[in-house]
Length: 461
Image 1 (cartoon, rainbow, N blue to C red):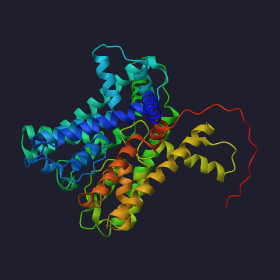
Image 2 (cartoon, rainbow, N blue to C red):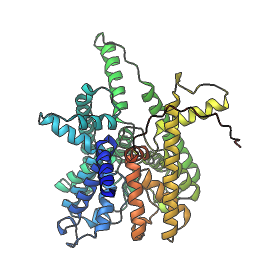
Image 3 (cartoon, rainbow, N blue to C red):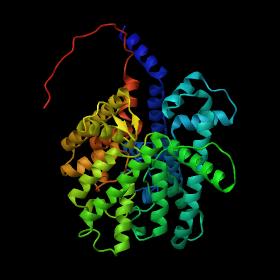
Image 4 (cartoon, one colour):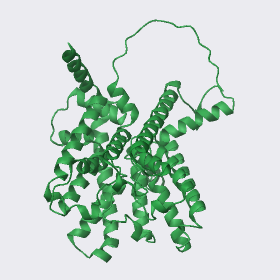
């Protein structure tokens, strides 16, 4: 009987869209670890320990960027390309790539796969799935290609015109757009802190990857419609930005600008004082952008003030936009919670955001996601504090960075114990899939009961 129950649970788990996504990520992570272990992937010609390969593969698939071995020196070009492929798969989503491959080969897609993609993209119309996914692939290829070309001009100055320069250009472009934060320089982007081109390209790719494909498409259609009607006398239907797009753009802009000002305010008399004024502002801006969950850095994170680290923890926890390559609870969730709290303080009976009413179910999901995310970071930090000797703020920063799939670190990742590495792996996995996805995948079907319970009154405050 116990075996039958286990078999039933596994079968029902696989049948759920969330369950398919959960298992597909586990499978590709393990496959990535297997490819990263052999000598052909490692610069020293030896086998990489399984836990380090698993950590690296998880970090790549979950587009995090935390590393326990230096990507720039520990891996061969083959190993670096494997990591790059894992980043691209993780950034786009395993099911999206699978569906796109099926579409290109003109094969029929099963109803189960369509349901999984619908769940992943939050797309209700199955007829639009193919066009949506093709659009996502096009956007990704275009932005990553443009980014690689621009980066090549700068990298070729120091690396010359070679295949290595091409690899570096594509690696950092894809890593930035996927919000991964992996770098082929041991000091990340610290050597380019004053380069307007490098900072501008990497920041732009991070922002574009972090606002979601839906928002990019929405803005693109608005621009094409406006330009066509104004300059080419076309009578296209006037396009308006969706409420989701407006919220993402406003919230993302506010977080980037406020993060930059806060980082500069705290650090301009300490870690930034050694740089000229333009570099100070550029470094503060770049580091604020990376808090959208891409773990590049142009200033040493381990040397930052405690106040700066705590500010970063908050911004990393919020993350990027829903449906993007970024992690965190998402700016969409943050905006819904802010709108609800504001409605309470202003005495409104409904939650309004940009003149739109938010349904109660949406608000409940936002708060549930917040609670589950806080719980994940709390448990992760608690466990790290039990097995690691580092200061609490460094452990909190590491746990939040892993959950938010950011990849920034104060420098303790290399020295984590076995249990510490496993904890971070779990946090990266939860952060990439999202606590709600895991909860839906693991939950059982609820039985319908027509029971009305008496109203309860509990004192608060």
